[in-house]
Length: 340
Image (cartoon, rainbow, N blue to C red; front, side, top):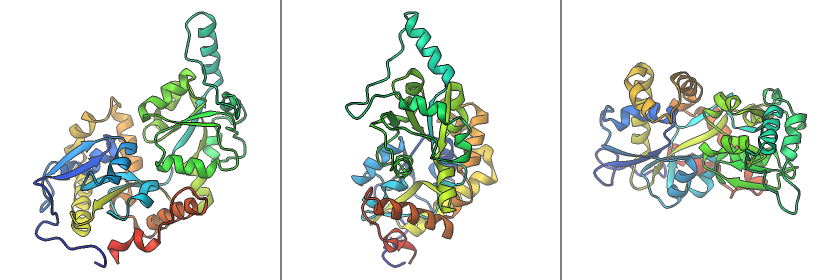
């Protein structure tokens, strides 16, 4: 086990119920349904908290939960107190964050509404470094097809205000790596569910989105400037590491927790109907088709086992970010210490 402490009995030393923090997104509720509802033999009772990943990233720094879903980008600040588990998280291909802006039609509709007296929120000035609105120009230069190619050379966000879902999210870290040559003038951290409406209304020139937004952004009159997952995969050949599952050191045996989660995943795949009610109850008004596509994309072979490719992707992301001065240096041995 190396540095991982073997805990007695059920692999958990804590309160009566193990505290778990995950998002309400369908992939998380699908994966953890059996564990949360006591259908995993040998696992302790679980008390679940639902929160956006930006909230769980911060809570994990305080050691607030026994098991917690966080961004891979946040690992350099967390691995002194938590073990990285090789399962339960979100990695994959074709599932990366998107940079969105308004379509020409949406911008024209907003202008017409303002002229008619139905005022939409004005685009914010980006400050002394440039005025907002450049992203609108980028939307014209970089068509919706840009997201399909993953190319960065046709998109210029210099001078723009960009809404992001958290300053230590993997999405924002990828965005910073991608836009290093021409960063936007202003970044605003915004709750995930407010990003697309804010871009549509003109409060932000562009928005960085994750999860089910890739299935629904066109409904908001938005277009994709770039698919950061495609950019990452083309550049590295590796899957994109999004969300990680961590176990608190000294409280949760990481080997036991890995077994619990893998059994929960196995049950979810064996009988998807068993988790259906739980998933839909927390799916934030997503229609069933979007829920199914969400689960199909984000729950995959890496959910059951990161494997060599998954760990390589994590190490590549954090290594590149550390080399760029965006995160603290994290040793590979520390990231995978529990398996040694």
